[in-house]
Amino acid sequence: MGCVLEMKQIRKEFSGVSVLNGVDFSVNEGEIRALLGANGAGKSTLMKIICGVYHATSGEIFISGKEEEIKTPLQAAEKGIAIVHQELSMIPTLTILQNFFLGKEIVKNGILQEKQMREEYFKVCEELDFHINPDTKTRDVSVARQQMVEIMKCIHANAKIIIFDEPTTSLTNDEKKTLFEVILKLKEQGKTIIYISHILEEIFLLADTVSIMRNGDMIGTFPKNELTIPIISEHMSGKKYVEGLRLQSYVRKEAEPVFEVQNLSAPNGTKDVSFSVKPGEVVGIAGLVGSGRSEIVRSIFGADKKTSGKVLVDGKEVKITNPKQAIKAGIGLIPEDRKREGVILKQEIYKNATLVQLKKMISRGILSARKERKYSEDAVKKLSIKIPSLDTPINKLSGGNQQKVVVSKWMDEDMKLLIFDEPTKGIDVGAKEDIFKTVEDFAKKGMAIIFISSDLSEVIRTSDRILVVRDGQIIGDVANDNISQKDLMEIILR
Ligand SMILES: Nc1ncnc2c1ncn2[C@@H]1O[C@H](COP(=O)(O)OP(=O)(O)OP(=O)(O)O)[C@@H](O)[C@H]1O
Ligand SMILES: [Mg+2]
Image (cartoon, rainbow, N blue to C red; front, side, top):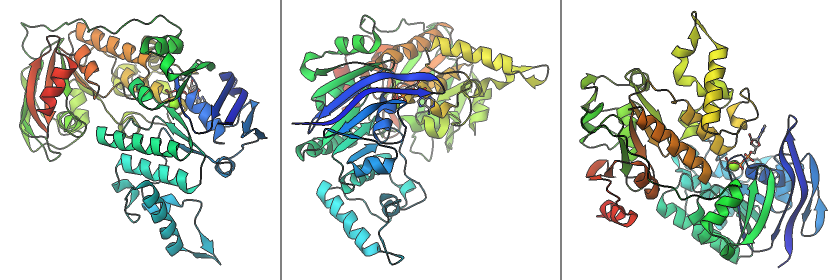
């Protein structure tokens, strides 16, 4: 097993700020290497350098022992390197086949060779045992299947090194299983895999070896069996590991509910949902991916239509047909899909962070940049958001730090109910604690919280009460008296 990729003393600066400080990284042929590190540690940047998306400020890259310059993604592809990006990059309005061959269309004498393209497409389908209609518009295909098409592109390009940058963030459990099977199959075929994820269970399942980065430095590479969650977490953060405890409960038991929903049904599959939340109470929502958890809260928030049902805030009915009315009534939602709904990608961080607080940012009739900055500075400190400056456009931040900016939008004590829909998606272990701390702070102030997570341990750590959802319906409402993950799972599957 030779060394297929070696990077030496890679440095990278963005506008004078160093994000990789001389990183050494090498991978052997046929291994699955996990790459770990806190949000903003430099994982995606290092991978984008191998793929020719970014250029290193200095350093050397060797492929199968030969020094190479990789200036463009095309050159990387020619050298057998392919990436499945953290954010999917296909064009939604094109068909799957068009995306599959994007920039690599087969043309003879000026004529597109569609028949040949189809044949090649189906050959790869067969090789991986994927079956996706090439003529479907990409926007009508689930994220999981789009990702499969990206993997098919890697195979079609004859890649020998395939990089996965947080591939599972939008997948259901079944889809994850399929993905892991595919990755193991690729390994069997002799491919080298570099796998980035914040979900340590996946690392323990898949990886042979693990490289850990911290703040632009490579801390080291370890065989998987030498690692435990506390060791990994200490390498990642440089701090001693403390086991996460259950959040302090601040539910005001004697108080009337601050929020109530009655008999809510909606075209998105929500069926006759009723529940209420008291001030300071954290209500968790558990259920399998696809059970309709997000749909329920989207209907409450006015992001999806309702067919019937009432929403009450402080005992009074409020009319919510769009998110603006929800925010006015004191309800906030931190959505699951930050790229689509949570942030304005090209705008500066401070503009994004103050998005829903605009009214308060006004001073003598005009928007006060000073107030916006002050609010954002506080948020950045509180959530330890790693940013070059407040003026950086949000799409320049690492994935996890973008998510923290979305959360920071709501850091205002005037909201009555805050809904967190998978807030820890793509967030590193340390930063998850910052988010839990924020939930605790909100509850302490008397806000009502709804907390959705696919990670049952998170629901158990945060919630006073847990609603179990299946098929858009609430099938269980359990007090969280130290319920175990196993017992909760049994209720979900019952
Ligand atoms: N195009 C860019 N311009 C300026 N700064 C950038 C750019 N891309 C990345 N950065 C900065 O480089 C640092 C490393 O980012 P990177 O995306 O590599 O982190 P990451 O380890 O992948 O984190 P995450 O786990 O959150 O995805 C971050 O501080 C980020 O803000
Ligand atoms: Mg990243």
